[in-house]
Amino acid sequence: MRRLVFPEGFPAHPHIVIFATHTKRRRMLFDDAFDQPKPAVRPALPAGTVIDYEIGFLFNFASGKSTRFDLEPVLLFKRGPYTEYKRISLQSDRALAYLQPLDDALYKDFLAFSDDRLLDWMTNTGNRFIRNHSGTWAHVSAKELVNLRKHYRDLLEKLWPALNAWPSLFVLKAGRFNNNQQQFVKLGNDAKTADASVKDLDSLKAAFSQLGKNCNDCHELYRIKKS
Image: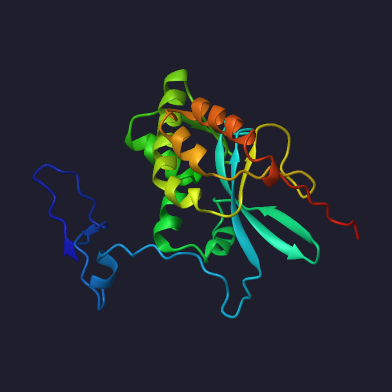
């Protein structure tokens, strides 16, 4: 701490002394540990948790988002002769912990569909959006919508080989996805051919409509008994 020296002519008060502190902070022990950004840690289930579910993916063309599309994780719980379906959010660490069975590479690619990652991409690429107090967001103009749909297509292209071999895939083109209504889809040779023509979400949706004609045997309805 040092005493301030008033310039000549400054009307200093005889009973007031002003002190200033040095702005440079002294380094503390282990300060170096805080200089480096902490690596992101994947959310994990508590130790000893039994993984009694399978993971599926839902191509949601009836999403409430302004893009009208989302790729969502679905948990499948076998309950005797029935199957219970639970969609989970990509915005919650507690929910993301249930994706623990996914390998790191697939998890990272899939997480690109989360709101945080999408908004980071929009910010970094100059695409405008609005967000309200509840956390929901929307693109500003048709230009952003076109760019978002192209971005979705690029993200899906990275995931397509894994999704092509994934056993539990669903598509929702209208209505709600729940325990009483699911539409299974199987990506086979037709999907590989369709992939070459998928340029945006509209052509992807059209490709799924065509796929549905060839996989009626994959569609199945499950009903959960009410307790």
